Structures are given as C-alpha cells and as structure tokens.
Length: 320
Image (tube, rainbow, N blue to C red; front, top):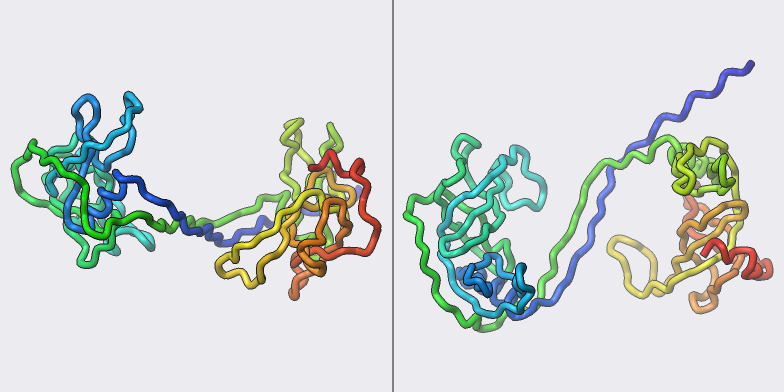
C-alpha cells in the first residue's frame, strides 16, 4: 500500500481591501458636518422631544422626517468606554487611547469618538469631557480631533439653530479599509499550488458530482466534503460579462475592459476572469476562451479567444 501524500502546507498572505465611499448629504447631515467645521455641534429633535447627536433624518421610533435642529454643548459625560492599547493607521490618535461613548450636554444619545488620556486608569463611566477641535477642519467627523477630560457641571439646555452656514458641506468621501491576513485553507491551497503549475484543479462533490472551481472544501448544496481532485479547462466559455468603464486604483489596465464569468470545460460553475485580445464590444456570451498566464506563471492574467466557434447556449445555460 502506498502512503498518501501529506496535505500541502496552508498558505497565508496579507490582504488589504480598500475603497472610497462617496455620498451626498441631505440637509440634516450637511448642517451637522458643516457645523463641526465651525466648532458647532448640532442635534435634531425627535417627535417625542428628545435630541439625537449625531442627528438623523428620520425619527427612529415613528419614522417621521426630522428637521428641527438644535445646538448642544461641546462638553459631555462618558457613558461607556474601551481601552485601545495599539492604535491602527487612520485612527484618531497615534498613541494609546480610549474609545468612548459621550453624551454631550443637551443630547439624549451618545457620540462615539476617542478620548486622549494617559492610561485606562484615567477613564471611568461618568467622566466629564469636552471636545478638542482639530487645527484644520473641513466638515467631517474628524474635525473633532478627540475628547479630553474637563471638569464642568452638566448643562441641560439646548439652543435652536437654523442649520445655515456659509459654503455648506454637500458631500463626503469616506475611505474604507480592511487589513487582515488571509489563509485560503487546504482546498484553495491545493488550487493555488495547481495554478503555479499552470493547472486548474477543482474538487468534485461525491453526492451531486458538481465540480467546484475554485474548490471550497465542501459542497454548499449537499454539505459533504469534496476531496476528489479534478483538473478542468484550460479552455472555457464566457457565460456572462460586464464592460468596466471606471479605472481602479493601482490597477494598470486601460478602460474600457471586460470582466466575465468563465465556465472552464469540466467545471460545475463559472469563475471570474478578464477578457483581452479582442475588442471589448465584440465579447459575447458563448465566446470560447483560453488562459494567458502572468509573467511569473502563477495565475492566468487574462483570457483570450481560442478561435473556436461559439458554444451553444444549451451547453452553458445552467452555469449562468
């Protein structure tokens, strides 16, 4: 009996998912962010008479539209907190700080931000604090640099505000970023090792016989492990596609280009891939394609037409 080969060592790699989120602002959010630029904190009054900070445009209880703005104090009380010993890139402070929920005087809800204190022993629920404004402000939540301890007595009064400022902020761009270490697991590790040999290897479900590429280690339909290795392709068929007209950051590909679902021969579902070697407006469903490997040969850089006749729709309609 021949001993089974040991499973390949699982791979790991750092991964960053990053994109800018652009949104326009309605009258309430515009007034709130413009107010921060002017060192003014605005809340909105609910139908029941409470004051929400940050303000929202609709009453969370009745769903009624809210427009009555009021100015609240820049001082408040910590309602709860958590210590952050290792600040990450993009967080409010570069030194250890506390995340705090602060109910500003005059507000009935709490605002999440950073508290600048020397250590966790300096934080407590009920601590009185005030806003430390950023030196340069542009109409964003970062106009509040952080909170800092401040001895004062709570104030319950609010002042009506019309929400009008010169040059109001009408839109924001909020960068979203997620850094983590990705481990593909044994099934996808075997798949990636196969790509390094210019082979596309999937796994077959022993129950329904569907071949998954990339493999997932288990069949999501039958709930059983997929251990049978199956080499598919390398050629395949375009099932659906889209034309990309927006250039992605750090991606050296000229627009427009085509991104498609490609059903490799022998696979039970389609994978994603870029189509090149053909004008973007000539890409079509049923187009037969083959991989063009990256310079280091570790993965297909894109797929190009094979020159074969288009596949009949009935051969790939179940893979749409």
